Image (cartoon, rainbow, N blue to C red; front, side, top):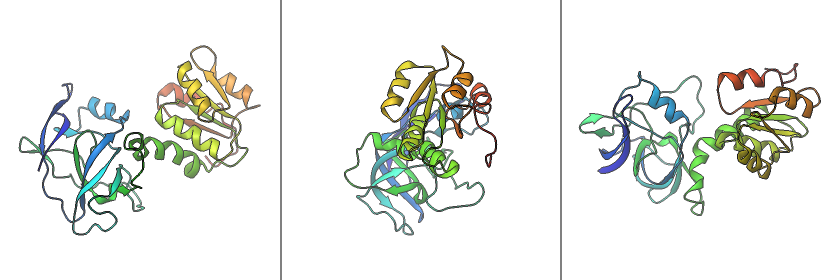
Length: 257
């Protein structure tokens, strides 16, 4: 079947929106007609990486309806609302690298196993999760990456408990998800750090108890002050050298790492 997607055709070149060819799904694959897609900073990393093979499709978080199902897939069926993600449903050890989807662009195989910047996605069933029919068709798309990354770091990786102090650097999609989960878990204080006052105000509405604008004050000194000596957990939702260097000195010693 033919569909349309945004395609990276070469390092440093503009993306093109063009027709792709989607084959019938393999036994383990699913086709989802997408309603919406998130936009993750990871896509910029991919576009800037000259070592990645092109042509390349992009995106790894979306919401849509299942239209085709491979013979071995049993957890979804045609007509189901579903989220497309980059995290496999089945727990695995080590780095899992599923084979390319089989999608082609101008008779050339497209690299990658999942994409959501398109009308229809063919991917492994491991990346497709059924959701309720009444979920919002737009904002639910970021559950596939931003929500599970930010909230999962707080809930599962750190294991934040009620009363634990938390600082979150960067309150974009991932950071806001971390703020919300910290609030659900009754952490205190929940300190949001960013360079944008509007984002910091929004973070308050999502559960942040304190905010720090790192453009106008020393975030390290301020977080240590607000937390009476340092936080129990600090999360970097940006990934820059400077934020990595800032989260370490504000975190109390004695944890598991």
